[in-house]
Image 1 (cartoon, helix red, strand yellow):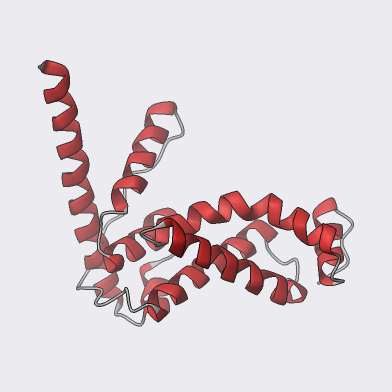
Image 2: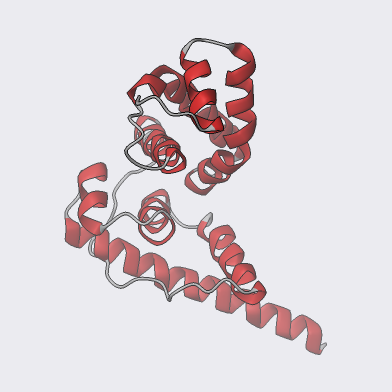
Length: 188
């Protein structure tokens, strides 16, 4: 890593030297954000915790490979997304990723209603099959291209596109059903 004198850079250097206090500080700094990512890719807390632990082991083992060419936050995020995908593969949860995907979810705005809607989408995505959920997360939330997804998951680009399209349709139905149930409950 290039010598850098930012607090983050110093923390990274101290972690590389094996200083436990710095490692704990780095863990505390990133654990809740990375746990959220792990939860998006797993169906339960136990798997998410396994992915989190495995991700931090990889992070600490590979810290010296961070070259400072991009954001450290992005580099850490990629480690955890890749770890989650590997975990899914190992557990044979990702059976078949179906066919085709296209379009993106609507542009997200950052007002309160949109954030609530995004949270609803993420929570609803947990009900999707592993294949749909993985492609949806990679494309809509983590910003991977269909080409990158295809390469990571060992599928075709068109399979990634159709899988995403199907996931969007399923999520739309799930959210619409929840909305209808809320309206019915309020109206009675």
